[in-house]
Image 1 (tube, helix red, strand yellow):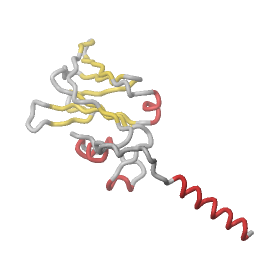
Image 2 (image 1 turned 180 degrees about the vertical axis):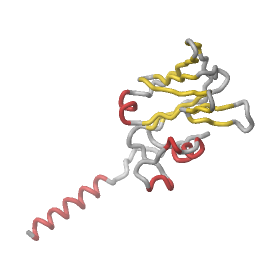
Image 3 (image 1 turned 90 degrees about the vertical axis):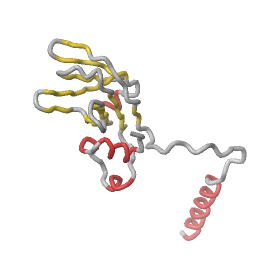
Image 4 (image 1 turned 45 degrees about the vertical axis):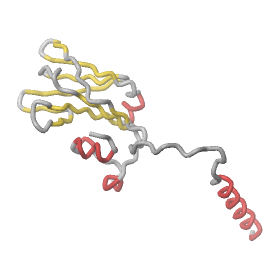
Length: 162
């Protein structure tokens, strides 16, 4: 039994020693931008709404929204109200009084629906695939509720430039 433990210990140490060696021909690359792996977001984008009866609708192309993202991930959508200073960033789904703006997703597309023409305001989506880790205070909880966070808090947690 003692001999088996010794052989096992030597084998494990040998594996660690050989797997941790540096490559001889690889040069160190430049420092990349800090971010959270696999989180995808678009630039703020203006989009033209089309009237469909009493509703206004638009589609924002989002090629990284896959069926896997729909089934297991999270997509957040924001509208930037540029008519106020400082700009107000509103997370969808949003309603105030009789006014509303909502969204739904399908593979490759974010559909925005409203009872107002919001063509003058830019939109942004953030795709958070299942299993994305976060840093800071939210890392202590297993599943941070990004829907309850402000836009700034989401950007801070996911290392996204606002």
